[in-house]
Image 1 (cartoon, rainbow, N blue to C red):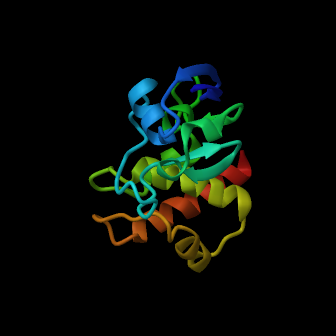
Image 2: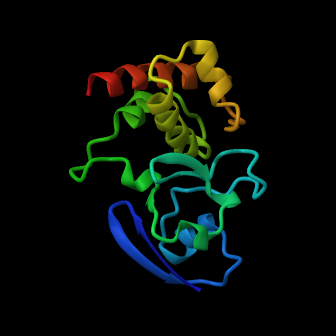
Length: 156
């Protein structure tokens, strides 16, 4: 099937089997490997991307469902000059990662979380990140990173 959508501001046209998941289209056809495959059952959140501005687990969405959509991956979050998105910078500054496998999906979810809930409390952040699993950290630095990113996004 022919699928056309915009990825990180660039037009993309793919010919994929109808059962191709968006995560596989991104990784295998567009070489955007920052989107990780963690579980293939939409439990871990490592594959989270933005579709039309909202966080979506790309392992639970067919590529054909992205027809005409605006898709943003972690590779599209930084500014063209390489300046990190405020949430990416916050994860770096607050040491909100260890192995880094969950980090791209966590950042993508955190950005959407902050857009939808700009004044989220610590408890709300913990609850709203429930669909993203980190197997390395105790989540404390992740929550601090989201809080810092939330402030930076609000002042931008």
